[in-house]
Image (cartoon, rainbow, N blue to C red; front, side):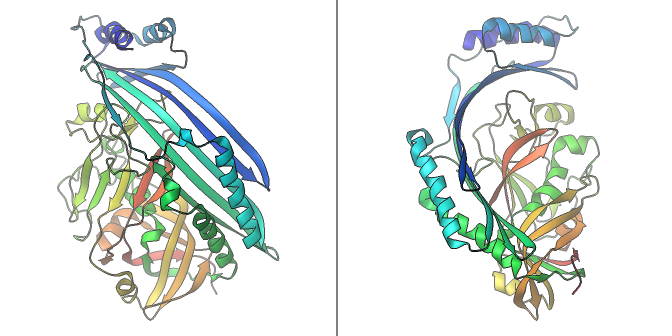
Length: 456
């Protein structure tokens, strides 16, 4: 495709400051069961090209799933603006720089029958184990993709990537009460995911959590200490802090962290990292959606704000370094600053030592969704699995809990950090597009958060 990419760039460059071509080709399989029926066992394919022209601080973008030269050149002409100055012709290297995210067992080598058998087996396992079950949904997805990116700086890169995702959702019922449980695992890699983690264990965790909530007491209410277990996931790290460190939000001054580089924004115990290079993690890749090499970015170090996550446009506007965080959902979207794998670095305390510091509060073992205001950092999140803490000891389970607070204030107030991380996968939505991410934190102690629930 080298000659075509050069032709597109040469056509567009006289009308702007910078040009990019993004090409993707991929396929996926999806197998799903619900209500004891196989409702999906399909294979899909996708292909397309996105063209981006930057002029000053403005971005022009168009895409097509027709990859004929006629169609692509037609899309290019749609982007042409009014700047008439002549630019030097761009010559791409003879071959793209190619990277592949490693895998041990290619998902394409596993038959659709084997994938269906796995999903059906987990469905049968759950129905045999769960007497209170009312609904089971099991979904398995794998994908393979090749992405090529070329631009007017002479960059030409190619990345090949495979993913596997496995998700279990259950609903249990006792009398009139319904409770749900969910568990998911995923890897940038291959079928070796199931060598490392048992699919039955994943299903059993979802069922256990749902049944546990049937026996849980109503959550306490009020302001109290909260211990967030590593298994809770990094929801607060991602939602209440991470988005506020994305450069486009900062530039708009819609972030509480705007104009605070070099300032203390967290407890000296806190070091926050975004790292897109970590092997196998759901948010990892060799290049971001603009062909920039991903890297380990220290955003907050010992409580001091060190940097923001950028894409090419934000880097051009601000002069901040490129961080490899320009990400996009597909060829249909232009990239924007996004997190990859975001987490707090571990501390030096055992989990039981942290719990022992609390006279009365709650332990959060699994977080759910919620709402965040990135301008202020205020948040409200659901607690999917929680327990009381009394006298430094973990008590019984609670249900119906929410926690509310302010992300920056939480970071400043952290009093203890545990030794272990537990990464959780997800899809991050922003500006109408979703990308795969991972987030994590060690067990932490927040001295005071507002806990909402039902008073006993």
